[in-house]
Length: 208
Image (cartoon, rainbow, N blue to C red; front, side, top):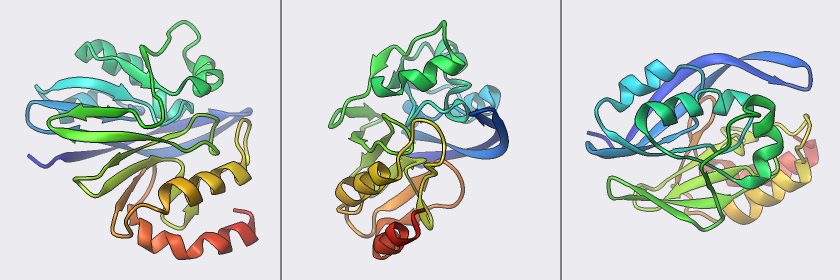
């Protein structure tokens, strides 16, 4: 079984009074025994089907926008797994789950392991206050949530986001990774660090 499974789920993203149709990438990382689920979005049954009979060691939220966490409690309860989130995201988490708290905190440099694969937490605020990425060096993959996409940084036009902060996070934390590192994003197509790095100054000039 491949170390990374991919499920695309569809639903809405809701913030600042707006509602937007979105397709989300859900990543399942591990082996044939145990996995970590990254960003439990929209469709708990579809994610559970991809997990199968494997043990879920954690449901990790790269950030707490509702389209990334709306199925986290359902998946956590279904598989008796903890929900992990950076505590700086609680202002957003509480908008969706005011009566349910994450089980554990994500901290910069923390290493999560499932199926013999290590995922190192990289704190990358900007899209939201406590956005986090997960870097698997042995796979040559970084899971970037909504921090870095093919073609640029994540959106920063809504509450609790900052363009200057996301640019600094990308510049200092993500772009120094090896150029052939695959970027598995929260929405849309994957890319590589080396394909995005040359465009940093252009993003800064354009302010997006």
